[in-house]
View 1 (cartoon, one colour):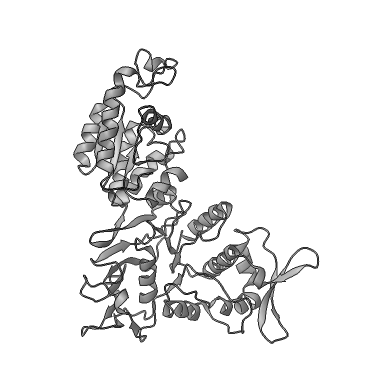
View 2 (cartoon, one colour):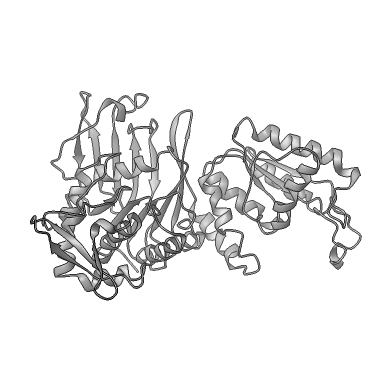
Length: 472
């Protein structure tokens, strides 16, 4: 599949916490499910919503003058904002504060396309239950959303889409929404005695209620379904926090639906939910980027395409499907202090060993382990590329060379080798016969290992605590 032109990247400096110019590379759809997804993860207040705000700013009308108050302009960046989108053709579109300084900003470089074909959905998706009919075509709707870049206030233009849906596109809209909510109740636009319109939601029998009774999650899904059903191939859709107010079952469906549309569209998600950070999408070509803040401001770090390729082998191993399950993906949304171990037994037993010794590990164990010593490298590579600076690996004693290799490849991280071939003695496994683990057959720590393991835990915590005071 070949798409004529896509957005290659967005670069941001001077907007809020972005003191140093940062670049976000966007995924390019290749026909595979999820390939056009760009997934932005990170903690609260790390800069994810600022990236969404930057997309909204650059998508506005060419002639529109923007004003950015002092609180939105980063002093370290010279008190000036510069947002630039680069297309696959090499054309660029930039929004910059004027050279003389102050709050005024303009679109100063545009390609021949004029307004950027992009729809940005803010996190606060709602609409007034009673409204005036003011129909909006998709392009006008997108421009209005881009022009109204209130950070903390709700934005309400969605009611302008409802007349078009009801009159012309209800079948197409319902086909998308029914993939998320089945069955979705029938709705029509009704008029109140005051002259205002409202949505009448038909329930079973003769029952119904107005749009005032719609839950926040349902409204959010209506927004997203509307953004998808008439989206042109190769268009760009940016959604801030798609997970808000949604049940986990709906999150799974929404993740699959967005991935399906991302076969031939670019979709950017700024999210706190591991449901959207599905690494099978990364292996198909999606991009995963982590936003975090350090002493110099907001930073963006992304997985490389080569690491995405390396994931294919791990994901193909059906014997260890949990390696990049939800538990593991939660790490992407957390701070430093990650502990890598070989398997799920290690994740369970190391905290118990620490408790037996009257202490605890201060870091966060990665999912249910990396799935064997051979996967330490790719997991460490993922965390390194995503900007983690404090990662620990605990390697079984039967492969000490793995720790040495990892220390050479990832000098910022720390790797330790336990003084036994395995975490526990496994009499039932012939390959392990005669190899005494840290734990005896009753699951108790051998007395002769207590001193060394206590020292190992102390060294792990001494490395983690200065960089991640929060611990678990």
